[in-house]
Image (tube, rainbow, N blue to C red; front, side):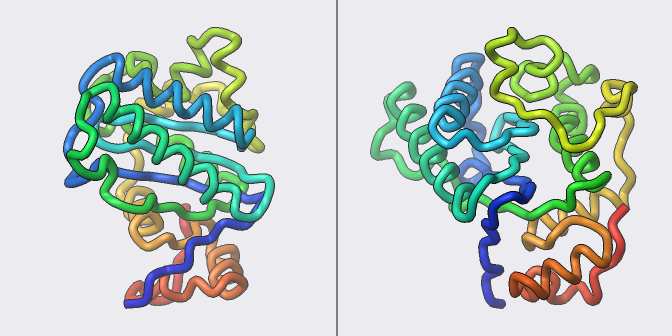
Length: 224
């Protein structure tokens, strides 16, 4: 099967995920998580990408961004992953022991309506899905904690959402997502399928030559 082209068109929203090599745990301490956030802050200082959400998990991370120009996401992620890997190895004295990440990051483009809210919720409730916490604010290494409990300087990393945050958003994060939502999100994550309603998916696939992202899945269905 042909590899899906990496879509990196400016003025669009993207979900990004990358996992540790062999899915091993690479975030083992408070210092490991803080190192990730420091490198993310440094990346933002350089590229000024709009970061809407992120979440660092024991063996992977999620980021949701809006890019300003073509190729920005690739440049940002190349700098970020290389810099984070280098600093992680230096901290743990493991230079020469192999790759930190399993390979190239995965990403998919998101329609900027309620589908974007679904992705943001998916990312920010990851610690609850993994049963690491029961309260979203108990996981300190994510945008939801930074947005609600971070210092003013820390909050500058995060960009405003294009959609209104629900007034009961924290309660919403404690509610499980539907099997259909999870299935569609994981499908987009695995195959880089555009995430949105049927018209948006079909238009985006045709416009950017992303047929491989829908192969073996039939006609893209409406995503709730």
